[in-house]
Length: 234
Image 1 (cartoon, rainbow, N blue to C red):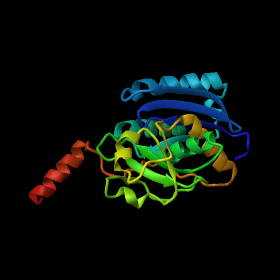
Image 2: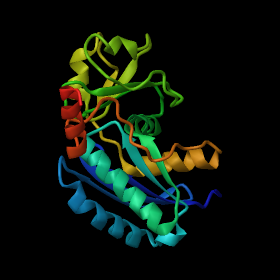
Image 3: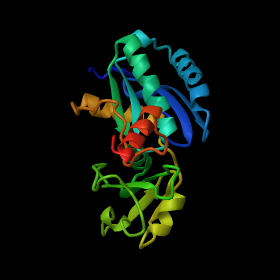
Image 4: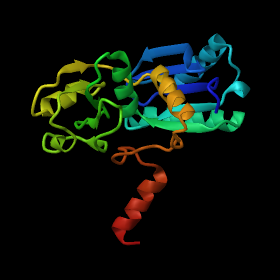
């Protein structure tokens, strides 16, 4: 892709719904609205508005990027299904990015003095999803559903910034205080900028496949029936 690429970014995996369009690494339209529920009712309208404001048509897009997790299961599915549908209808590639890397990238971009960043995402359960990133933006750990005992797996000896919508759940588990706490959710605008940066650098982005750190609470009727049959030994 050339540096004038145009991207549509969609984020619904956390407590907000955001859409952005970038052209040549510049954000030309952005809509952001905090919401714990209701992404399915708002997302299509937000996409239509962002595309209209950007002056970019769907055939002109070079790709679509969407968060693939971790996050709230319902919101995650809404974003992925919508991005895939648009990609299928327009014949465009659909890429996936993690919520943790988008959070960390936003913190680093806003700072003149990069630090380690512990990205924390609220998955709507007791344990937040966390991942540590170095000052260069490279992950220093896997993503885990953290507990007080497992938090040490992702921490380094270096000072770090705690960032994300999972700060309230993650901070009490930390063995030492962070340099700074930034309560923020992943933003589609940051995702579009990060995707552009990687694509023009020749870094391949993963496909838009959901990243589940743990199984969802909800199961399909078929899954439930299969589980009942297995329990009965059928």
